[in-house]
Length: 182
Image 1 (tube, rainbow, N blue to C red):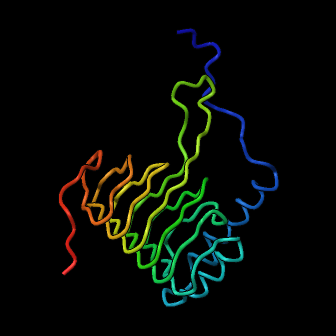
Image 2 (image 1 turned 135 degrees about the horizontal axis):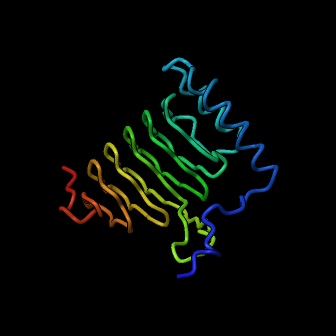
């Protein structure tokens, strides 16, 4: 292969306005959001809503959660993002109601075209339906839908959509068993 035309350092696909908005949010996220008292959940919801997030007032956003491009985030009632989770909203991320996104979970909507000379950015949305639990250190990749009442095991890498009422785990995540609610 001729590597002369290969350029993995691509031009930024974002407008100046978006870049400025991103930088302003990063400052807010790393100061006012991060250093707010742990009990100020509604304050953190208010901050993220200022930047266009559609987050229900009953949500719990840990002050150490990292949320990039919050204007692409939608969260239903009684859902939570725990400490050190990374919500990378280059595309839409929709989280249903009563979902638990555990510590160190990565929700990643962006990747790169592997066959491109310019390593072009590609984005796809993530949809997490109602009553889902994403266990510690799970990674959810672009384009994945996790259906109602599914459980994603700790340290799993989810590369494709997950059916309702199933438990999956591993790298890549595979079906373990049906989830029965008693």
